[in-house]
Image (tube, rainbow, N blue to C red; front, side, top):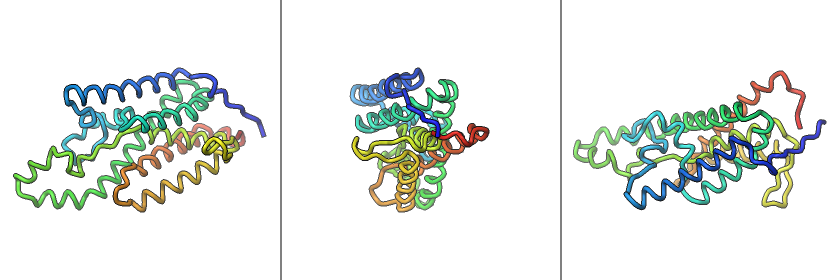
Amino acid sequence: MTEFRPGGFQVLPLIIKNLLIINALVFLAQKVFEQSIGVSIENLFALHDVHSVFFRPHQLVSYMFLHGSLGHVFFNMFALWMFGSVLESYWGPKRFIIFYLACGIGAGLLHLGVLYYENLPIIKVFENLPPDQQKDLLYSPLYKINTATLGASGAVFGCLAAFGYLFPNSLIYLYLFIPIKAKWFVILYGAMELFLGIQNSAGDNVAHWAHLGGALIGFLLVLYWNKTNRRKFY
């Protein structure tokens, strides 16, 4: 087995550096605009159900640069740096940014498909309401159809899946102490996301299907790109 020692923890590749900066600046802009002039960046750029009046096609790209809290953006960016820096060093910046955006868009598309199915009963109820009640709900943040989805998690899950495929025997340290091989970490994490997505518990505001969509696109892309190099695993 060829040994691979990732150097991404010591250096900050170009695309990763720019993604970290952009996500941090966008998060800052979210807070500044919402608190100073009351402009909701989420309504404009976060991903919405296709039935929502706030839905726009560009949101399939823009949603992955927005985050809901400091913890949300921090952990997503930490995971992006942890796994993405190795992938960018391995592939180069051009292939990595294509991969990253493809995973994010794929995650958004799968999430929209699930939302379309889940929200059909709500749409039917809405269509049977009197016009004045429909008007009140149309732009309301309390109307479930207008719930925004945001975050880089789908794209990051794509990076995680690719890392687990290319470097399956690399060790990941859970809670900084518990070693687990990347391949088992990816499989267990993916199984947990699938279970939670199917369970669809009330109050669970995590986009599990977006995570799975990003991981699926990431796996398929790296499988295709690596089809002539199947025997080389680290």
